Image 1 (cartoon, helix red, strand yellow):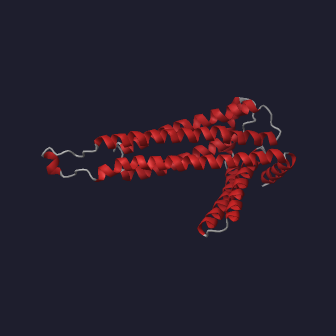
Image 2: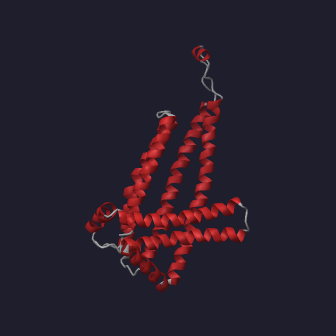
Image 3: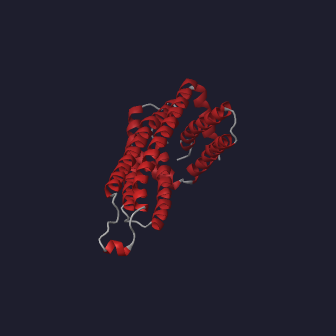
Length: 268
């Protein structure tokens, strides 16, 4: 496909013409991965601790029907369950807010700097489009996820149904992220009307083009992730592990550059 060739050539030219900017983007990508990993690790521990405060008393609760009818309490740790539940939900909200903030600020800075590599000006308008499209797509999604999780913890949703809900939400997330990427590739479009239309023109009408680029990008990202997995499983030297992580960082950076270059090489 000719648009892929044009996208590849455009990517190489942008990197050659803006080497320092390219290195700056790699540094930002390292910061992004580090912060996401740190926040995720810490909050997942807090959420698990909160869940244990809820689950352990429930495991030791009184489920005997006769004793319950005789007036025996279901559990003596109702305060602990309530406190653990409130703490866990608080940590989940904080976790989502931290992820959203990191995504908006650092990931946004990466996309805007990539546009500078392609000599696309009006960075303020691009930033507004980035933030607006991110909020429009992500806020409703995370809000729905929050209430689904809250409903599940309140035993409003059966565990069997919850597994199916998670699968559906995962698919919905992939669709949302796909359209987010479409929007990120068109941040330079001056008129809002044309920017909105690009979601249909490129994201739906010419869906085979972006899907082709996604398959290429995700293939390399999977390869980089597999390389990291191999180094972790085989306990190789720290230098090899560092090189594997750097390979992932470079692949993630190149995938964004190639995404913008290729989608803007499509004949419209």
